[in-house]
Length: 311
Image (cartoon, rainbow, N blue to C red; front, side, top):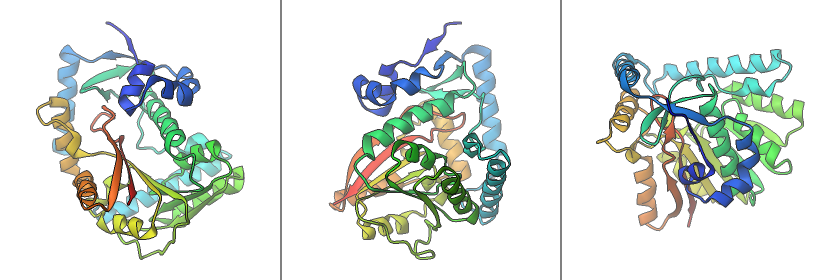
């Protein structure tokens, strides 16, 4: 079977930039990983489609259900103890929902990567490019829905002099963030914050601030309007969201159609990008970027990039 490789040009098209920008910001990281893959086709493709259809039919997880809060709390507690017990190994911060060795969605089809960590490594390249491209000028950076803090660790290593804040709605991420900061001397603090009810744990953002969410708007089950209102009231300078966006799929493509059905079955947030476009039409914000990466995990694409700022 033919083996393909992700090139600098491929990364540039995916991220919505040019080759020189990728080379400047990410070449060292790209060189450290194997981004080769083979296409999945024939009988193997048919079996994969069957597996996904059965997963959609059998899946019982409901995003935003009351019991999900305890599930998240238990998961982050497990990461916390793994981190402590490993003598503060940063690899233990990788969330357990990032699965290795699965087929990947790429350019409207399914691929079989050579490296089991292909998805995480591809995301790591994108994350480094994103953080270098858009966050260098801001003194204060807030991640809402920070989980284990593994994104903030990357920021702390890139920008050791910046003020970094990790926010989550359950206590263990806060404990974990503060433990990371204590051990590694990062300029980083954790705080409780509820994106659905921003007034529950009041927090004033500092001037010259950028905020970002990575897979946390998706968990709000569409209840994002109060959070956006909060950001507008705080006069934040820049907002970045890396999220699944159901409106970016093409329902006439089988791979996309299955992702639509999976996201609808679980109840992941929909309507977020249209809502931001409505705010833009009212001159309240300016959308700087809304880019589909055409890359994702087995069941959906969770790495679409939306960047905006208040007017």
